[in-house]
Length: 608
Image 1 (spheres, rainbow, N blue to C red):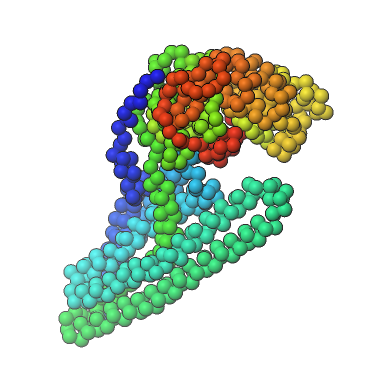
Image 2 (image 1 turned 60 degrees about the vertical axis):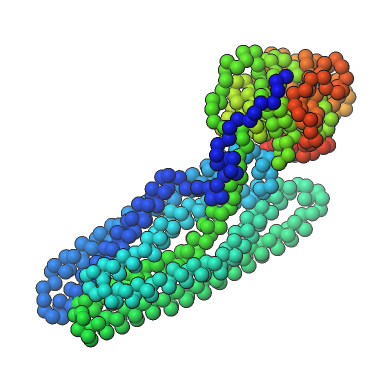
């Protein structure tokens, strides 16, 4: 066995544990935001010049001067403003759709890269809500709200510069001081209402998680007479969510009322008063005074975004924080490493190769420094005490758990977040607990091979030593197995899973305690079917029962965080050769050496 080598270099961001604010937008989304920002500013300048020209044209009419040139300027500026605003809306809304898809892919890819073990604390209902409603809210916030709002906040200053240069500096300076109060008030309101926005999002995701949990466990809740209690809890969560939404809306409406009533009235009144004062002193004429008064309309542009801030902005920011919280979780080192995913020339006869592998379901490693090679066509037995790491090893071989360090190759493909499906497709997994779906025997067999013919299914049942029993059933292949397969015995269900694995016809067969839930008679039939099923395949079997290991070519023992070679003929005892470091790592579940099915990602069923 090789000694433990130094770990591969880790990219700098991963060594630092990832940035505190990982990027959520794509380069295309950022470009679209910049374009929308520029178009909005240009449109605001066009609106300002249109109003200035209109005011001067009205003044020219009162003094019987020519207005043709001023009206032409006003019309051209209006067309420019409208065109820019339409283009900005089109760019922002079209980019929001693509950014929504990008956010879903980014978050889901990171969750897959973390692996089930590192994301086990995230409830599935909350994840579903974040990937659907949450992603949509973040995309709308970043693409349709953020850039236009920033532009709207900057636009009044540019328009006032335009006003000061073309008309009069003093009104522009006074109004410039006044409009600074609006963004400051919005920031203050956000700080006061941020808690209610976050509380509303938490209540919404908690309700989604509770509802999904109730739907998934409906049968168990009914059998345990807990359905009414769960229904009452859901009603309470629904009421909590309603109150959180109402609290948020009440605060939003109060802020909108104040901004619309106070600032709109103040800015328009201040602009009109300044225009009259400057007109009375002779500093400006009637046309310029009208231009100052009309320009106050553009200064109200930020107020149009106040309502959207509370409905779009705060919801988007809360969900963006949730997405960044997921993205800030560091990926396993083996996932972060770059390089070739396949190594066809590594070992011509090797089907499975583990090179200095470390595995963990949480922070503490269960396995360390594991070096193991399984030849093609070999039958390897894996033994060891409960909780030592046997099911963790099988979860990695099945592609359900990513190594924390080192490399694992199955049929020449190195396991990573990008290649999990490829690794999974190389093996068929028969787990301790067989999961069957409501339907017929044929329906459950076709999960492994959707286009299997009746003759192929009967042959698979024959290999699994189940054909005679199915033939005696009233409807044969069309016999209903009942909900979760309760119409079959434990031995029949396990042999049906073996038939499913045979139909899948994968080069690697993974057997995780295939006889742990059956009696001795069923065990004998399962062992016979495994012997036939194993022909021409690489088989890795985990079992506590000696009868299930009699056909193994080689055996390894899992204990003390390592994998140790033992003779298949000897009673698995202390190891003779070590491939790992001593330790006290344990798997999440001790009973039966079963890794948590929810974390493993297959819910304990055989994967074929």
